Amino acid sequence: VQFVESGGGLVQAGGSLRLSCAPTGFTFDDYTIGWFRRAPGKQREGVAYINNDDDTINYADSVKGRFTISADFAQNTVYLQMNSLKPEDTAVYYCAAAAPHSDYDFDGGGMDYWGNGTLVTVSA
Image (tube, rainbow, N blue to C red; front, side):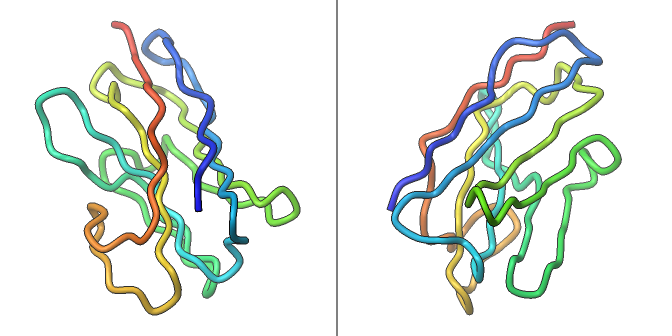
């Protein structure tokens, strides 16, 4: 099981990026897919989740109204659209998946599969 993550880069504050996460080795129809980030010197934090089994979506308070997570089942890809980016959004962003009935927490503990991450840098 692997993930192909893309879309990171350098952007000015107020700009937008769209991250993509395409798992290989399984289809994510019944999985929960999450985006997480780790900023320099900080712990990993959850950003957004989409549960493809019951169609629920959750966001961290810090990104509500600015970030949107979505799933394209035909492409087997999950996206994270990031708008109104701020310097404090600078981090390595990871996608991860939890199999059905897995026990996980919002900051990623217990997720079953992880990508290698993509760097997002927001300049002031």
